[in-house]
Length: 221
Image 1 (tube, rainbow, N blue to C red):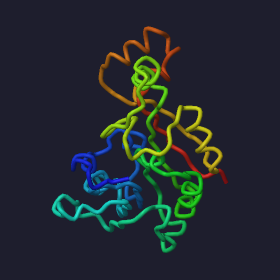
Image 2 (cartoon, rainbow, N blue to C red; image 1 turned 180 degrees about the horizontal axis):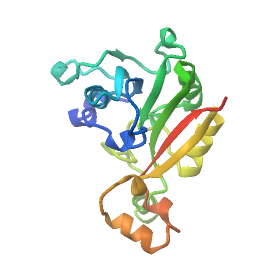
Image 3 (cartoon, rainbow, N blue to C red; image 1 turned 30 degrees about the vertical axis):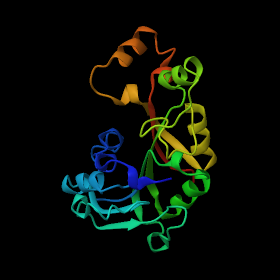
Image 4 (cartoon, rainbow, N blue to C red; image 1 turned 180 degrees about the vertical axis):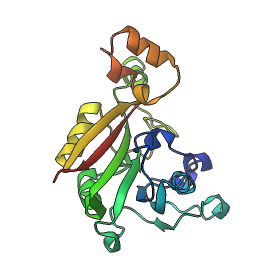
């Protein structure tokens, strides 16, 4: 997998879709983000006093664009399956994994390891793409095409694909209790064709209209 070929905006966006799952009353959290990119989301949390400490991990270091990185507390470069974070045992209030787990061959051990760095009262927020989205079905079933793409559901750096059921199983089998679930339809605050169509069909086909799923979870104590 070559992350170096990714466009710089792949690493630069603020993940407001994940931020919406954070308790709006939360302040001064210790936050760890896996797949932090340039640290843009963590920096947003810091300047808005949601995070008092922001630590990021990312597999790719963009040495050609060092000025793109935001001034967060610490950014560690390396594969999360190998990075040693033992100095942060039971330390973080919140861990973010924005579209990360589909890039990992064995995500369950990673989720189990990350819980070691979470306080007993801490939370994990996860987002993952949905292979059951109608665009993926159209491509595979009606176009007979499974070519990888630059980004999206068929991103060429994805090694696993999930439907909603599989995401839920992964989280619960890893020792997490799901507190809240949202889809790209319910998470999106504006109007959209998919949102209107989902409402018109009484949410019967929501999994086909949902491009992503978002979860707020905690350790099952």
